[in-house]
Image 1: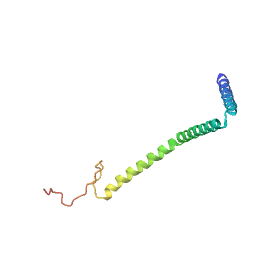
Image 2: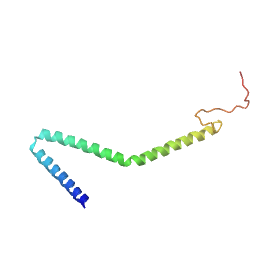
Image 3: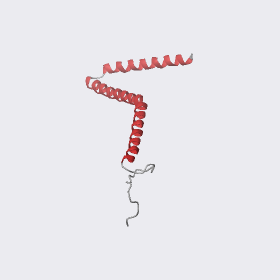
Image 4: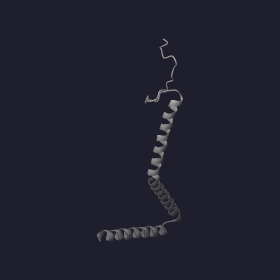
Length: 104
């Protein structure tokens, strides 16, 4: 069980570091404490926002991909409604003429 011992030691070191930081915080002046608290708060918010963004990314990516595919399907479906030829494969809408001979 060396991995369990490693986890325990890592957790113990983290607790000791937090305690030392909180003890040192008590001995600094009020202005420095406020600045440090603000910096820690900003760091914590940024860390939390990045964690939430990383957690939500796969579902947001799938949703964006579905919406993009739906928009492509709608655009391809609208081409037929405007009288263009089906199966061109490009984004150009070409109207169908009754008389297909060249005029010039």
